[in-house]
Length: 492
Ligand code: ADP
Ligand code: LRH
Image (cartoon, rainbow, N blue to C red; front, side, top):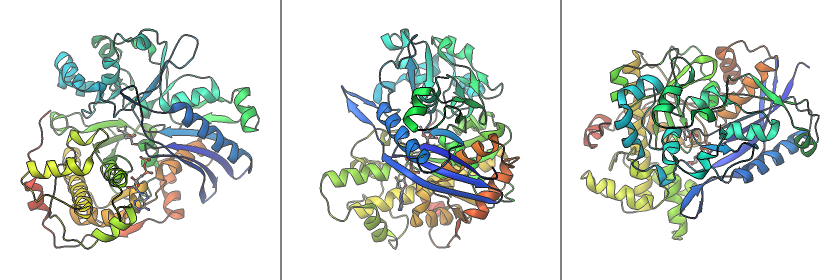
């Protein structure tokens, strides 16, 4: 058929979406058929994902799509790093932990001492994040679950396994584990052995575009479709799919902020940057679709704001929904208070307004007292971090940037988009909101025969069907001075 109709499952830490994408010559439509809330579940002192609940929602969404038209393919992307373990019978061992669970506290420092930060970076090319898969696994050494594990599956691969019965690890997501060699593009088995991990649990790698398999009969029956519907590996790391969905045309360098629960701030490159400078600046080189590199920085992101909103809602403070707060602070003076939004204390769930006030206090900044002031502090501080990291990325990669793309749910935040333009001094092109789902759809469509030879063709199609909104930088606020008010970056 000239038109393909595929299901894109895009799972974020805040919500999961099951969307239907229709692709034809010069056309690309995306409709959201099913959205469900997501978030950590606290039980027995730990923070987990409700992965069976997610599977149930995925199946419900797919069933809805299958019930309203032909289904040519299914692709799944989700947040990175977290995983489930299967036992030798193929059953899930325990519940997957959230990367915000505290069992990894202190683990990274111990592993780095054992392995050496330089060796770790030379192999994996990753930013030091306390919750990277390798550190979660080291924290789990000696547990009954890890000792009886046969296979480790990253979350989108686990969900794909439940649809097809096939195990594997898609490369863009494998590249976030700290157990993957960014240069050879294979598992870093020596590293896994050195830190005492059962490396045999790492499944065979696969690439975006590979067919994972047909549906299991039981699943096909639940969806009401033939077993032959293929599940296709996409850029299963949501950020990799989002970068495919950037509507860039003719930019010398694709510079982006993938803005959701996390903000991923960086550049698309052809080769990793593994210099000592990149390590010292604590940048990451994650794998992208078509063997590209996502040279970026994890920024704490809108998580900080959404946790603050949750805190205010719990305290029943009026006027603290997102829309009211954004409207209230849009014309407030810029840069009254800035904090280091990358401070690791902002990682776990908790009292964000209190933590922001504490950071302001430590930095000798005016303390934001009201929800409005805290909101503005978070947004100004995010924009300041975007500016710093984009400049550093461009410098480390030897690139000049002409435009910044903002995609994901956060691209709807007009104030933050404008502040990002102001802070970086670059025009911002905002949207699409659902870049990850679009990237998921496009990679499936190519695998199923659509004429989309490369990323440029995919992005041109996104640009012509999902026009981004432009923000130009405004003069006025002194972002240089604000930068120098921040505490000096922590050395790693
Ligand atoms: P994830 O994929 O990590 O679940 P999303 O890409 O869905 O996250 O982005 C979620 C964030 O998008 C929310 O935390 C919120 O700050 C922002 N957002 C969502 N809708 C709007 C809106 N209408 N206006 C401004 N911001 C929004
Ligand atoms: C964004 C994201 C990010 C990871 C984090 C765990 O959703 O995948 O790229 O670092 O979640």
